[in-house]
Length: 410
Image (cartoon, rainbow, N blue to C red; front, side, top):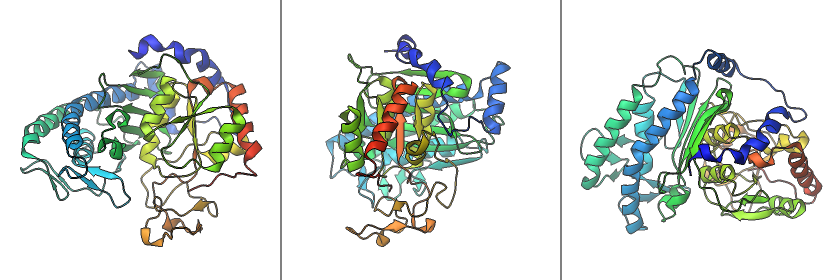
């Protein structure tokens, strides 16, 4: 269903969300965002244009992803086109190629301040055959499709303004849900692209499901009043739903759900969860434990906020309902690290040999944790949960149980 026909999902709550400023929150904008607003007044909407070009780039790579996905589904577990990452998530040829096309071609040419991708360590060759991603060889039958896709991406790159985005940092997750991609759960897979201002705050982005038919997606840039998408809206909305991960539900989350009267909604993959919030399949996504990174929050946060919701770090919300964003900038150190509050895990440890299973290790040294791990939890609320009444109810439910079941930040 085309998003323009579905705006009633959020319109009733939008005015409340724009007017409400949580206690303790500073309602300020970075210099880049302020300039963006001025450009909107002048009739120029650079972030909107960037979102539209990015959506076309997602459209361009989708056929290639679908072909690779069909092969991986056939060969799950033994396919030459899939391999395990060291932290037990799948790395695929598709993952590497899409990121390479976006970073080295679509966004190339010093048009942006910095670019951060999940697969930055990958070595990709799509110039000379046989094409390769690290030590994986792209099957010959895909070479023509890869070449044709690259030409489409190159053409889109020429439409990106050379000077409008010099202060912006991009975070890219070429395939969010690579485990789902490689195990036949393609409807949960998304492409995530987020555009962040000089302070690392998401200003525009897209969440795009490339393996569904039709392609479901949402994009937006709140400062320009832009939101668009094709949404998979359920017959019955679930504003009392709280999204839970496919892993173990922490005591804090379980108790919050019980205390708030919400219901558990199983979900997979970070980008997919945010689309579920926009689509009305749940009212909230809250987590204290980690296992996700800033390429999982950059684009999704921009999209959710453009559509009337919110995404923020959990500790500040717990304290006084402050909505404080993660900092999405290129860095060698974790810019959101907090001493004596973060537990070392296999997921967030820079050196995995430092993690000892069964031992609760609270980190005091920022050098031990990955620079882009999200280590302060997450609270994401759908547009239907943005009225002060719902914010207060969720905040109260968390604080009622946090002494008996405190959040575990990892």
